[in-house]
Image 1 (cartoon, rainbow, N blue to C red):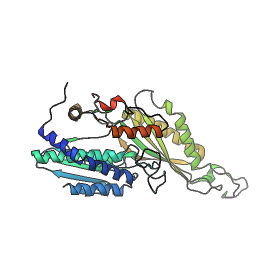
Image 2 (cartoon, rainbow, N blue to C red; image 1 turned 120 degrees about the horizontal axis):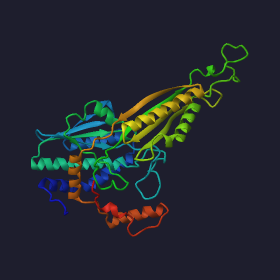
Image 3 (cartoon, one colour; image 1 turned 30 degrees about the vertical axis):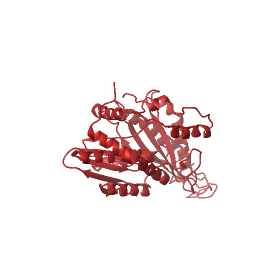
Image 4 (cartoon, one colour; image 1 turned 60 degrees about the vertical axis):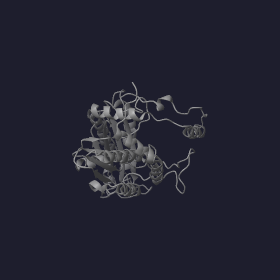
Length: 385
């Protein structure tokens, strides 16, 4: 099967991409160097807002009540509204310079924010597609509206549920989601049946506000506040028991098949001195990524039981606070087919000698040996959905 024949509108879009390719690289470096973490992407969001306004878009800043979100529109007459989006949040403690050796960006510690996926490239890649679509619509009289949302805090499943709940995706004829993948066979392709599974994220908060009730003093004192009095272990102990119990039971939460993951982050531990005062507050956040809602509910039930047991054993109580809940994406074969046809028109990535030389530096600096072709063959061919 040969390469699909391009239409004049597609040719215009491709020419636009070729023309702004150096800019896309420079813009990616800009967002990469900002490296702002979830809900703190003030400079990154401001950069996108300014860029979109320069490109003729009307922009609502702080969309959905989120200071680092936005929603942009460009209209070329009546017609369908197509959505796209940018993500631009970085990860704490992953500061890396744009070089082939491990080192933080100038003037920063490795503990600063940095792009690991990187969302710096993901957002700008989407912006490139948006500008190419606009150029084709403008030149060939294609009617319709482009909607481009800025999605902060993706790593904590932040803005998209809020944008959805507040109507920012209403009226869309389609949404183009660009998110490269790094594991075969899902590279250089379009998803067919599997679209971003369910994700539950919650915080378990342990509170020890009556530590004196753990044991009663035998000396008749009405309120046992002496330094030697027996008190509850406290919130830190509850958190650690929750952490270890959930680690130990992880293999028993779900079947050993399909793609799923459970990740945790300790947010708060202690809120007290290192004296004999029991820790009053401790918090741990879990993120569950699974193919189905039933699987997410099953894991949540196990975590709830663990939290209750840990709280009872430590003389604490617990609260569960939801960060976000999202359903699996619905398979859309029509959109997947259109997307893959477009990929086939463009063709797979091709790495020139300059790119290979940089990749060889990475190989050596990572402790390996430089190879003639540091990229696997699959990176330079398309994979059918």
